[in-house]
Amino acid sequence: MTAAPAAEPAIAIAGLRKVYRRGRKETVAVDGLDLVVRRGEVFGLLGPNGAGKTTTVEVCEGLTQPDAGDVRILGRRWGQGEDDALRARLGVCLQETHFQEKATVRETLALFASFYDGGADVDAALDLVGLREKADDRQSQLSGGQRQRLAVATALLGRPDLLFLDEPTTGLDPLSRRQLWEVVRGFRARGGTILLTTHGMDEAQQLCDRVAIVDRGRVLAIGSPAELIRSLGAEHFVDVECTDTSAVGTADLAALPDVAAHELRPARIVLTVRSVHTALAALLALLRERGVGVQGLATRHATLEDVFVRLTGRTLREETTP
Image: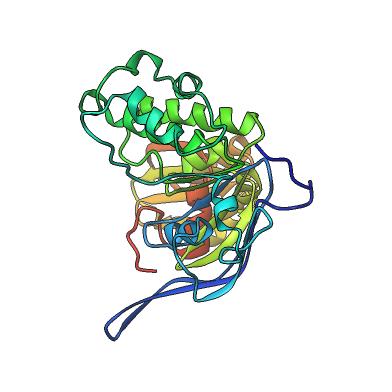
């Protein structure tokens, strides 16, 4: 990895805009996006499909030409005569990578290693992604998770300063996802910077130092996962199923201690609370006083999806058009 001034961000984006045109139809993929990724961090772009995450990453990788805005990658701009030098410092792992089916894992890595001067050793790359025991297996013998770890290994062969991972765990089983997470953590521990796109809030909370919540091509909020969750004003939810809530009013719920927000339905009450034990005890006492029966009760920590819902009124799983 190449040393750089501490103050120089890995990625600096200002006013990025990209519009796709097909006949008379225009689709705004990215709409005035601003973003700074610091060196040495795992930065996540979190949002639903169609939010503009992949387009943003493709612009950063030099694969897509923006319509407007300024984009600097490791202090350089694409198209200024330094593209080859810049590409040599990047690692790219797409959502899906296809390799030659009859080639072994070792042969695939050897081919990609030949593209770099002074790249990583093939055996070292195998160890980094935990594929040493699969080195002589052909592509057709690999599981989906193993294929994706191989794709990450090819991206690491050039010893990049900046690694792009575009939804790398989509479709993987839980074990394969966690194995890939360990690869990401290892790269960061060695001083690398990662831009990760995902629509998995658990993945973002596990891996990312900071996250930008993106929707319809714009950044809605930026911060660490903990900071964004704290922005809700409370970090816990209390969800109670009731026989009938007609005897309870919204003013009653708002008056409960440590309640930041509330939702009242015909047979359900959902509270956003700062303290579960204080708010829950008060809620149960209120329901008992009003003669409301409790049929079910659940509490949970707030997540990044709750932040997204608060910002947009939709869930991260909903399909959207940018």
